[in-house]
Amino acid sequence: MNPLDAVVDDAHIALFQHAPTGVAVVSPSGVIDAHNAALSRLLGHAELRGRTLTDFVHSDDVARLREAFAQLAAGDLDYSQHQVRLMRRPADTVWARLTVSLLPGTDSCIVHAEDVTEVRWAHNVLERRAFYDHLTGLANRTLLIDRLRVALEAHASRDTTVGVIYLDMDHFKVVNDSLGHEAGDAMLVALASRLQQSVRSGDTVARLGGDEFVVVLENVASQAAAEGLLTAVTQALEVPLVVEGHEVVPTVSAGLAMAEPGITAEALVRNADIAAYSAKQGGRARVAVFTPTLQNSALSRLSIESELRTAIREGELVVHYQPVVELQSRTVVAFEALVRWQHPNRGLLMPEEFIAVCEEANLVVPLGAYVLHEACAFLAANPLFGGRVFVNASTRQIGEADLTRFVASALAESGIAPHRLGLEITESGMLLAAHDANADLSRLTELGVDLIVDDFGTGYSALSSVLQSPVAGLKLAREFTLRLGDRSTGDRISTTIAALTRSLDMYGVIEGVETEAQYALARQHGWTFGQGFLFGHAAPAADIAFHDDGTVTVATTTLHAVGT
Image (cartoon, rainbow, N blue to C red; front, top):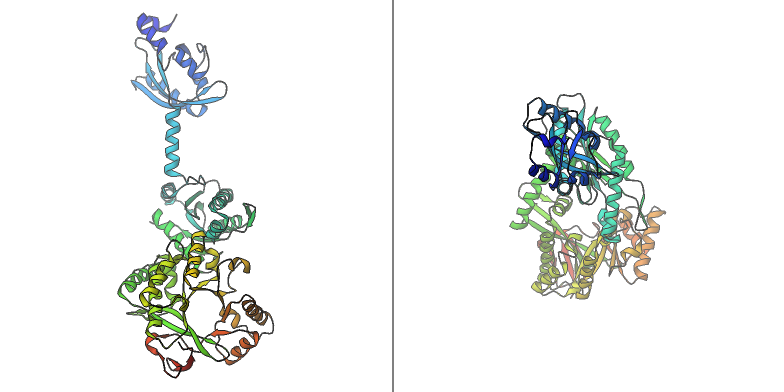
C-alpha cells in the first residue's frame, strides 16, 4: 500500500507524482517507500522503491543525513535541510538540496530533492575567482592572508611555528619582452607547478601577481628547518626549463620571515617581502632572512622616497658635469651629466644613494626630464663650447614614457641642435627594451640624437643583441679599465672592443681612467676617447668656465676644449 494513501487524498497524490522536483517517502529505517518521476530522473533509476536512500548519497554526506533523520524522529527538529551529493547512474554526481520533514500521522519522512548542481558550479566559479589566481590556479593574496591568519592563531599555543617565503623571479621581464607574454605566462605556470611539488602537503603556495610567489610554511620546528625548506624550493625553481623552444634558466631572489608573538599575517608577508628585496639588491639569485635591521633599511627607503619627491619638486637636485676627452690631445669634446642630490641635512648625495629608490618609486621619469633640461641649458649657456653632453637614460623613460617627447621639449626650449646631445643607456637596458621602447629609440636617432651603450661588458647577452638598436657609440665599463696592464683578459678585452668600435664606425669611450699608466695603455689599445678622474672630476656648472683661448677650467683643472 502506498504510505501516502493513509494521510492524503487523490489530489495530493497527483501533486506528489507530478511535482517538478524529486519527492520520496522514506521509512524510519531509511527505505524508499514511494517516489515520484522527478526523483527517478534525478537519480537515473526508474524504480527506487525498496532501495535505501543513503545508497544514493555520497559516503562523505551520509553521516549528516542520518543525524538529521534521528533528530526528526526524536522531535528535536520540524524539518532539516542539507546540500548533499547524490550518486546518479551510471557514474555521475549531482548536488541536491534535500529538505526532510516528518509525514503527518506517520513515523515516515518526506524528502524533497532539488537539483542545485548549476548553482553550486556557479558558486565554485565565483569562489575561485575571488580566492585563486586565474593563471596558475594558486591561492591569491586574499586566500593567502586568510590561511596565514588561521595558521598563526593555531600555532600560538604550539611548540612549532610558521614561516613565510617570498619569491621574486629575476629578470622575468627579459622573457616577456624577448619571447612574448604567452611565453612568460607559460613560464609562470611551470614555476607554479614546481613550487607546489617542492613544498609539503600542508603548506600554502600563492601567487601575488606578476612574478611574485609566496609560500606559507606551517608546523616548522625552527628557523633552521624553514631555511632547509627554502633551499629545497629555490633549487626546484632554478632547474632549466624550455619555453617556446628556448632553454631558460630561472633564478630567484627569496626572502624568509619567521612568525613572532603577536605578529599579523600582513606584517609577516611584508617582512618576507623586505627580505626578498634585500636579496635582490644584494645581486639577485640569492636568499635573505628577515631581521630588524632590514626593516630599518626599508623604513629608510620609504623616508628617502618621500624626501626625494620633495627634492624633485623643490629643486634640491643638481647636475654635475664630468669631462670626456679626445685621448691624443686631451681636448674636452663632451661632458657627462651626472645628477646629485643636495640634501638639506645629509649634504651632497651620490646617485648610488638614491637612484635605486627613484627607479622603484617611478620617479625616474620626472628626474630624467629635469636632467635633460639642465644639460641642454648648460650647452646653451656656454656658446664657446662646441662639444656634446651625454645624459644617462633609464629604461623606464623609454617607450611608454615617450623619451623622444622629453628630449624634443628640452632641445626646443634651449635651442640646442640634436647632435649636441647623446643618451647613455646601459647594455642591460638596451636588452630590456620592449617593442615600443625600440620604436622610441629609433625616433630619437631620427631626431639626430646619438645613443651610447654605457657600462659595456657588464651585460649578459651576445653583442649582436645589443647592436640591433641604433647605437652610435660604446663606453667600456671601468671594471675593465681597472684590469689594464694585466697582460691577460683585461688587455685583450680592451684592445678587442676598441677595434670593434672602429670597425663599426662608432666612437668608443674608455671609462675610469685615473692614472697616466692607464692613459698610456688606453691609447696603445686604440681608444679614441676617455673619461676619468685623470682628466677631471664631475663639477657643477658654476665651477666650469670656458675661455676665449680655447681652454676650459673644470673646478681647478685646466684643459683644452673643442670650440664652436
